[in-house]
Image 1: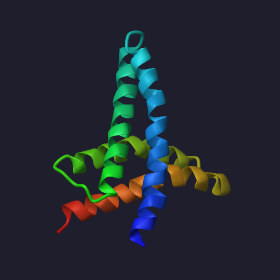
Image 2: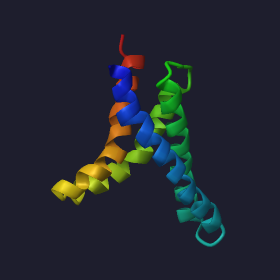
Image 3: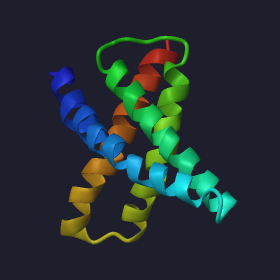
Length: 119
């Protein structure tokens, strides 16, 4: 049953977030020459999101290596501002849908970090 919850709340939303991360990646690369600070920030944020999504999908198949913890932390750091914006601007019925796509992968990644780091 745990595998079903990992797929439902972790893998499915992280696939969408990983695909959407290519938009800020392209925008950040385009902005690197005009506004280097914002361009580098967007590029770094999108790269962390892509790395985090790939690591969470790999961790869902119980494939852990020495970089799994760093990849999960990068994904949490990339998705945290999105979940934070939803929680700050909370409107009950409409915020639950967006919170599923942003906080679900964070919770699953924290679970995998706990499984990996705690004995």
